[in-house]
Image 1 (cartoon, rainbow, N blue to C red):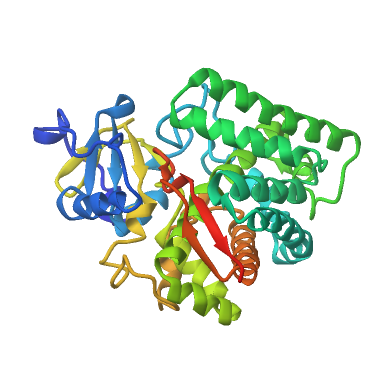
Image 2 (cartoon, helix red, strand yellow):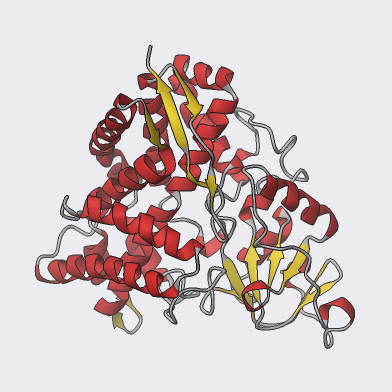
Length: 410
């Protein structure tokens, strides 16, 4: 490849790259809007930025640089670290913890259960869950979109997609809340404890599928157990780790994403009303919301060689986070990037689902999840207002973890 991001350095690091300064502070207290102001500054002034936090790491902030990096699987690998801060407890869980071609069988098995026909078949049950949980919250007149609805509704989605026992939904929602708090506070003991609860759910379903396999087109655990690698079937322990990883991703992303969307609609009541009157436009709105409010700032890679980019040298073996949230507002790609616009001609260039080998396998399911949420929310309300202060996430997520809202239904 010829992109600048993939060209190895020709000599040892010198100048600023030898002792990299701090270009940004990932721990600064944030408001709902401030991260995007900071990312705009970084794209202009230090698109390859360094922080000494979390043992030191780099951040790519421009769209072109990130796309080049995440599609170069030889120079930027995920098998050492895939998120900052690194709280993986020493485990490299598939599929994110493996590089191509090792990760490919895991991805192939998951993709088999996420085809359009399977997703469409899930819609009636997912809509019933969304309707019930929204009726409960809206009926009370107020509720926390992020810490209430956006934890229990995704838990039901995991139950339906993974074919779990319904009793797991409340457990998963409770664990998601605790895991989120533990991760934000970097409390390793609580991370380990809540992670263990997710492992228990994953282990139970995998052990059941070993005894009672289900169709591989509609059951992720069965698909993974049936998948072949060059060295034989995927080991059951790896299947358990894969199920545990998809549980985390599916539970952690919705609270900040759904909260951010509701805040946007409250700030723009004209858009809110337009979508009520024109529900056919909700899928287009979903795509723009994903661009604007990607719930993960980005996933991390590790360099396999020195990389020269924009006058900086990223040394070999250094972690690099790909700031998708910054790339999605890069004005070199998206005109008037901070504004909501329907039907951008290049909307599919957004990186809300990543790019390359590790692009989100569940993108279609997420789009359905969001569409149902907006359709059911807007048809049940005539207005919304914030009902208290927002609580914001920390690295690696982006958005509110607490979004208290009052609802009008008159």
